[in-house]
Amino acid sequence: ESPFAPTAESPFAPTAESPFAPTAESPFTESPFVATTESPFTESPFAAAADSPFSVPKPGDKMVALYAFTPDNDDELAFEEGDQITVLEFLNEEWLKGSCNGNEGLFPTSFAKILLP
View 1 (cartoon, rainbow, N blue to C red):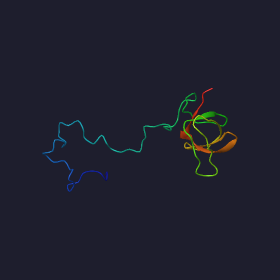
View 2 (cartoon, rainbow, N blue to C red; view 1 turned 180 degrees about the vertical axis):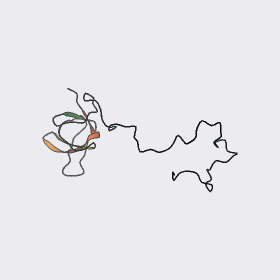
View 3 (cartoon, helix red, strand yellow; view 1 turned 30 degrees about the vertical axis):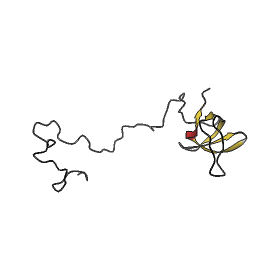
View 4 (spheres, rainbow, N blue to C red; view 1 turned 120 degrees about the vertical axis):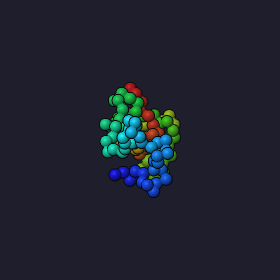
């Protein structure tokens, strides 16, 4: 039984006077909003075609900085908007390791886009 099912004490419980009360003529015998454990997604929403500019960056890929990034930590990579960054390592969907202007460090994935060959 759903923890969200209306009870007699619930102010949202259907009544005979309610326009939403189930009737014998109603084609709906249960709510269409029943939660399930099945997901409509068969793959990550971050997945993209191999030739897409939104592909997962790979070591050796070239990227261009969309924004300037000022590091908060010593292991992060500083760059300016328009700088070219070479990907050294994919860490996760949010962070990459790269090199730019002779320096290496971590940078946020969302601050750069892949340059297509």
